[in-house]
Length: 330
Ligand SMILES: NC(=O)c1ccc[n+]([C@@H]2O[C@H](COP(=O)([O-])OP(=O)(O)OC[C@H]3O[C@@H](n4cnc5c(N)ncnc54)[C@H](OP(=O)(O)O)[C@@H]3O)[C@@H](O)[C@H]2O)c1
Image (cartoon, rainbow, N blue to C red; front, side):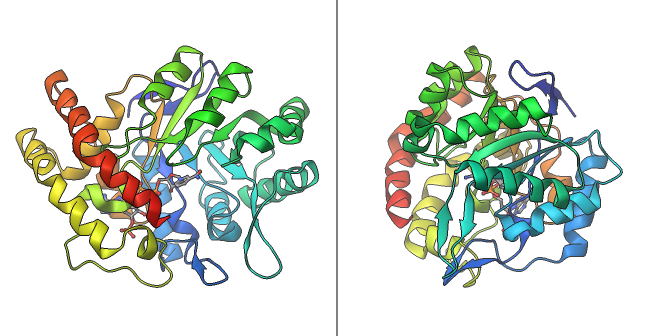
């Protein structure tokens, strides 16, 4: 497995990491699904261990994934592997009525950090992220001060921000302009290439870049059909409704042809496209099973410049308009 330096830090991260949202299981915020449907914890543990055996040394989670369950599984599966780098996030919690609260207050971050350390069975978090903090939170400043304090105290090695799926630039540029933190997490995949310019600017400024959602909810694995429907406890039910699924599938036929030309799987092509961007430090496909750990950790293929250009053009012509509709879906 290729390793890449995470920005200017001394972390060497596997080019392919492990997205651990799904293994958190089917948590709900009131009536809203905040997970990916049912999972089997035994299978999740096998997925984590298989991924590490295959050279994946970077795991991305959040205290909100499965309301702590994802972190607990990681802590259990990897307690004898301090060499595996763990990134987690803070800033989401549930209100008493079950609704989602965004909380970047000093007190919440300090106490959430202690709870994450306990669940992860670690004394230090390798990389700690503000989970989707907005410009107003950053400008107010408390959350920045407390992240810097946690680094000074040795509870956190490096910190950064996880950015908005559809509009990553305002907060990303704020971090860059003020020289804050060490890395950014953003969405970058075939269908959503909105962060391309930001990635270039941030990488040039020495930030580590985590590219999330490389499979666009699993769509880019090619496994969905027009008949695919998601369960009530799977957030894809509202994020990928039938009309968007159909439209997306129509636009992907040429991508499948390209994967065949490289003798790559569809998943392999999707991950290779992300890794072809030199600014990306690590791409973190969501992994729920041992089989997905094996498939997603395969060596990427080297795409020709002309094919990358073609995929960029397709984004402008077809996928960005689709993305606008996805944005309306939530
Ligand atoms: N705001 C944030 O900070 C934020 C937001 C989103 C994600 N993230 C992070 O980014 C990670 C990755 O993004 P994501 O999980 O949203 O999306 P993704 O990687 O685009 O899609 C992941 C889903 O695709 C399916 N899948 C994965 N590999 C597969 C394979 N080889 N074959 C078939 N299906 C496969 C799995 O679901 P099924 O098996 O159920 O189909 C998996 O949960 C998350 O786990 C999380 O760590 C962060």
